[in-house]
Length: 539
Image: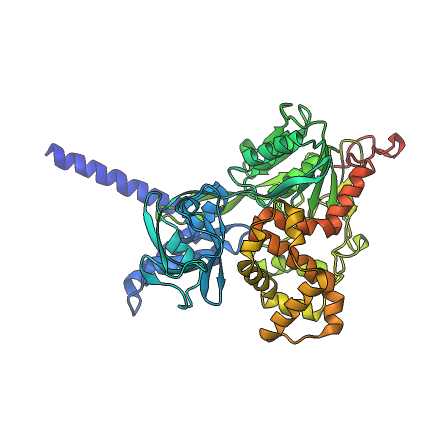
């Protein structure tokens, strides 16, 4: 009897909670639950309700803001790996060339380097399964090479210097996912750092590179955030803290619940508070990139050079669901120190229009002329020293550099769309690795590349073989652009990704302008005269 009474009480409590939760839910929630129940129980054919929900969730979230999204369970690991700073694999990057997996970089200290894999190796088999010539997508190859730490993958390798196929049993290990593509002295006193994302290791990588460059004589820095779509908010805060004096505002966040609002200020521990600084932005710099740039601009701490940034001022929180899928839901807006929200306009459920904004900017001429950008005067704010800045759509640079279209022709688009620049560069380096391996430094390496005319002729002949006719009127217009890109790609294939930037930056208009501004002493924007400053901030 006591057991029966106890079970009855428990059952009553459960029914009461369920009933009260049901009635507490909104009519929309009840309707959705009822529809799913009807489909499951009464639909003419048997339906996998889980699959139905899986396909419905993305559409459900698409009616919110453009950055709330659903991540299926099978994609979550890859999505997290990109920002977590490491994943478990064998430590190579590869290119799929003529349906063959070719190793183009072996990560230093990784499992593959320890086993003796080399750039140029062709992966013929993975765990005794033929992968060469099988039209296997890149994503599937990645899944075959990745795996749990400590597990082994057997690779069948064809190497030009070996007559027989080689076999390597590689034990998977932790592979770093670097946030920084390049860090080097671009002038005798200027350190250049290219940050590609804001991941879990960005703070440590960034500070390490700052210290390294300072040790080489850097007293001023160029932080290149072009193409950086963001990542973890905290990493942008840590980076900003390195350059700001104590109690400088970095970012404010506000959500629906006031208790979750926050304000972040620098703590004064930064080691580079006196270093001259320039930040590079373009239309693909977003989110955390804009937090860092906004903090530097609003505190008049650095000069921003380039083009107007993307305009993402929404903060997402990722919640993992019981089936290992996840939802990234927008929970806050962030504001730069002057009080501006730089989120560009959007309408819930109108994601296509939002995603076409970049194209609209291009068509309106914004990439080429700053006068094409119209600011809302009602969203004017003031920096620490009184300079006007604007909310409502990205960070506008202090120094505008137009998009460089010199050399862009139909021929150039044809070879780029066919991927021929990368393919030619890789095939060329693959044939000449022995000669390039004797180079002692970058200058020695570049001297081993054919002169510009010969390199261009070689490429044009290669393109003809691939079905792109030689149209010399357009080729001559694109000559410098093609040659410059090929040299950077060849350097990257042989020496590593950092050397792509070391070569490409020599003729990069935005980088050149940044160096010119530093040489002119313009790293810190001028103070607005007192008679031009408002007595109180505009907003």
